[in-house]
Image 1 (cartoon, helix red, strand yellow):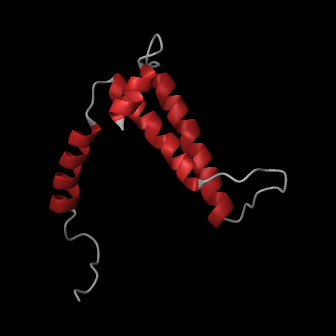
Image 2: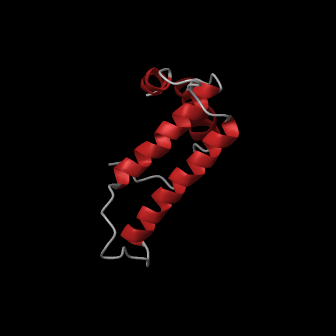
Length: 103
């Protein structure tokens, strides 16, 4: 995903905004995702005049913006994700949550 985002971004000058600008954009995108979750599962329902938005589209916007942040900082998200999974989920948190009974 990062390579696709970078290919798209490289057509612009500069290809990426400053980190604080990307963070502001990420906050906006997470807010839009939260709004949709609230419409789907919370007490706040959409107005009749509001259009339907796909939850996956909002998640994709968040991922795109995270890729922009990572790319602008030279961070390989695949590498960081693998490290996090190894250290936290397969290490420290391996027995933190109740597991399903084996079948």
